[in-house]
Length: 203
Image (cartoon, rainbow, N blue to C red):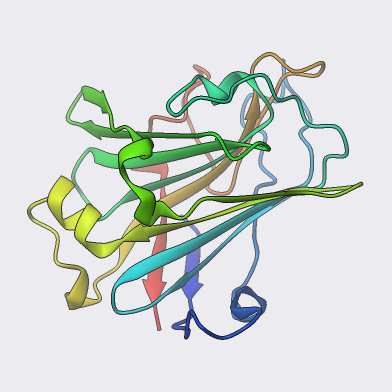
């Protein structure tokens, strides 16, 4: 059974609005035979009438950071990822991947085709990165207009459920790892499996 995440509606001008969002723990290691563990991590999502607000946190004291340009291969660094399919039942999604420097990779997958979308041209993503002694964290905004343009069958205002997954990875870290919120069933190491996404609902 796929998990469900319940995102609260917030006032973005309010301080600490992520305090109202539940934590989706990224604690499943589907390829445990070769990669049995991963750092503790979790995702949070809030929303307004105009956008989704995403925060990802990892309890990792020394994250690997080597990529600094938009759409660099941040999955090779210590990386936190959020994948979203606004049109459940269809094999498509947008992926947001970010390292501890706030370097963002954004893409769109649709029925087997994948393209990158330059986040440098989207200042409305409002990426923020934070590093402390024992954790790192990234935040960004996903505008409704962005999702509606990528997925013409989607209407954000309808408030319908979406499919999502949260991931933690690190291809070229001292201890390579792969974990997810909603379990990936594929034997191959890949996060590109929308059929295994969980559900996000807005209340």
